Length: 406
Image 1 (spheres, rainbow, N blue to C red):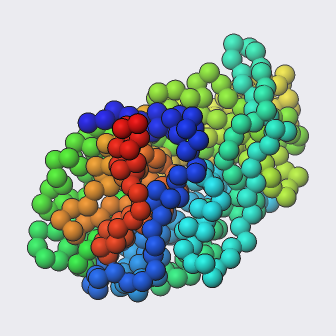
Image 2 (image 1 turned 45 degrees about the vertical axis):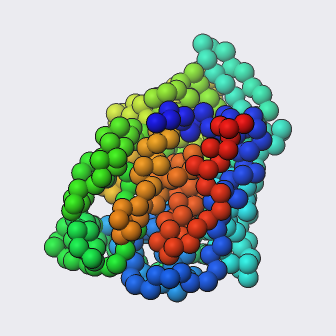
């Protein structure tokens, strides 16, 4: 059983020049035409994976319904549009691969999107502060930010119109019985739903906590994966200042550790705005440190740290702040599978069961990448392709076999 981790693979891919060049071709499939399956599909969860799966099924003319526990769709796409004059992504924020990923999700050559993205250039600066020393260097970030929109806006514009009438909210599934020919789902109020096949996009933490009972029980491999998986906590905050004194990104000694990550960054980057918003991104132990603080203590902690780096200017120019604690969201309870997880965990969680249960989501991937929107969308494509009996192109499993033979 390989112990190669996501971080190991991304380092290797970077060295080989494969990090973005291979991503679309390894998972992209021809979605044209209908598969042999003609029954009904139930999708549990209306996050990135659930919405993507429903959208692909709709394109194939397959009957489906999406059951969402929350009162709104979007999963961890939540956006705040009142804090400032551009959308603030409270969850997923960046595009980590080439912009063609948006076309891959739309999956329709006749549709042209008008989503604007902005990257980072040598003029953008990354700062690093440790042991009272502040260093800067040109940004090496390859991620892209949405201009005047967000991942949520993208899905709401190009995906939701096709599937909205198929989304049912406030339905929390607590039992999944796949012991007979049909799969039966039961919600917390006793409501029942049935279909020939079910795509499960429930967050990993919810399954790990045992909130869903499976009959029969999940295969031992999946249970082992759930037992070993470390799901990082998630916390974001946004601070407005009357002046811009901070770089594009600001890292500290604890910004990238085995137990978690945190980064302060210019959330206003590329926006058509004169507001100065600093984002605080944190997962794992670093998120838990913030989550343990009161709102006032958090404010004082962030300002004190910035004051130390920038000679007191943070406290002098502070305007307001807001926070998003993903551990407090009942249908998320965390951020995502840790970066250091062995790849077998996400692969095991991606496996279907008895041609009835299929899994899709940021932590349910057969390829060695997880915890982002594009992986959730691609895992949905793999689940739908398998469900309808369609085989994609080169899988990551096959790719690694080729690579290891070299």
